[in-house]
Amino acid sequence: MYLLLLAIIYLAFISLGLPDSLVGAGWPVMHEDLGVPVSYAGGITFIIAVGTIISSLASERLTRRFGAGLVTAVSVAMTAAALLGFSVATHYWMLCLWAIPYGLGAGAVDAALNNYVALHYTARHMNWLHSFWGVGASISPFVMSLALSANGNWPAAYRAIGLLQIGLTAVLLASLPLWRRIAAIRPGDGAQAAEAADGAEPDGTAEAASVVDGGRAAQTHVSLLAALRIPGVPSVLLAFFAYCAFEQTAMLWGATFFVSDRGFEASSAASFGALFVLGLTAGRFLCGFFADRVGDRALIRGGFLLGAVGALLVALPLGAVSFMGFALAGVGAAPVYPAIIHSTPENFGRRNSQAIIGIQMAAAYTGTTIMPPLFGIISGRVGLWLLPFYLLALALLGLAMTERLNGLKRS
Image 1 (tube, one colour):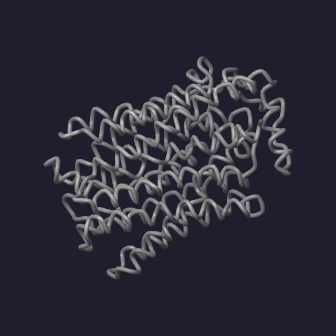
Image 2: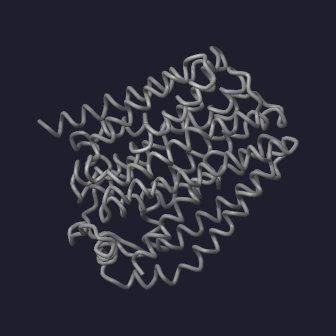
């Protein structure tokens, strides 16, 4: 029963990843059909990210009132409705309107599920969980590529992913009795049993007991100001900001970069842009096998360094090398997000983890809100050739902040 719950959490992360690559993959054609400048992609992602920030900050209250199972199912349903709305949009303002439920649906479950896994499961599960997000994010660009190959029919891609999300919503709704059954068990027991059944060391304690569905976490409330005063928290927030800006900028502008700066066809560029997400997904899957042995700090350090190397390779005016660099940047980015989340209880204490992970989610979405549109504005004046150097600066910022955090923990 408990492993089945974990499988459902994995399924939820597939659904979270499905919409994330669609806008970037289809935008080279979408902006022409809608008659807007290429830089307007940043406006859509800004609205999505603001909605995600709002829903992530509200997730604790929503989960306490309605239960994680219902919140997850409704969130996926909202995303499905938004995608179907995109598929019938004929004007840019329509995309902006549908971006509101798009963002609200994406963020409601993120902080709660990430904290639950960080407290109760080992690093391998955290990496594999986010690898399943990458599975969803990897599917979308190929669906868009197929749709663009068929006479540039980008609405068909949104329609297909929207219908798939409806199917996932049905599965999640069918699983609600399971969430209610586990809710009747003392919080924390389910996760411990799942880890034991999986052959891993149980990682739940009475102090860190968390909710699976509907209850309250057995932790003292930590205010925002109190969390920000904890040594190292500002550094990890900046690192998370930089990482998520790196990831989202690469996903949003990769295909457009290959079309406008390197001269490839839009349908081919959509597939090339997916190389980052494929590297991200494969990297997280592989990291799951050795994450417990290597440790979170080494994964974060190595990830930022490899992401920086990948960005430098993208800058080279060689087609095959640029593609390899884009994939390598994805592989490097792979362990950073899950490792930062998983290390939060160790770095700042289990009692503080829920509050800090919630703030980390807000910092992450702030990065995805500000930095990709900012690149759109800058590249509109300077040129899309700037993309790899922009990514390099973000990777180095993330590396510097995490090394500063490590220094504080050693002192």
